[in-house]
Image (cartoon, rainbow, N blue to C red; front, top):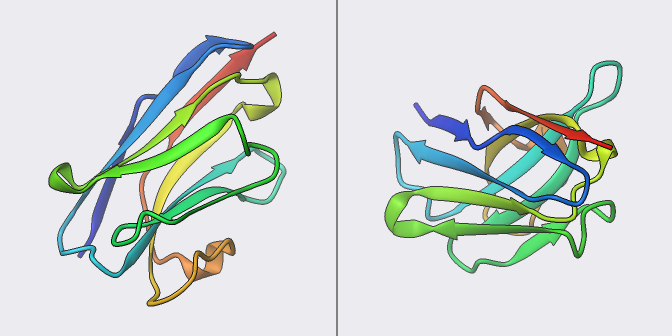
Length: 125
């Protein structure tokens, strides 16, 4: 069983920054892809970013490219999402997730099998 625990959400003004953390436990994650998705009520859950533990290759949604950075600390089994230049439209519940795939960086939520409980990010104008 895999556990993912997010932290770091909160309230911030537009233009500000937040860093989300996700601690993973329960098994080794060498071949896993770690991702961040976000959800706004009434909308589909949206892909934000993904990273592979072994190669640190990354992928971002166009809406966050150049503003958000996904990274890992393998020694701490932790994935981070550094969010800069935040906009009100970034307001959502952010979820950490893991996909057991040998290749690529999936963006479809159906490819991800483990999910955290989510952390709220609110950006005010």
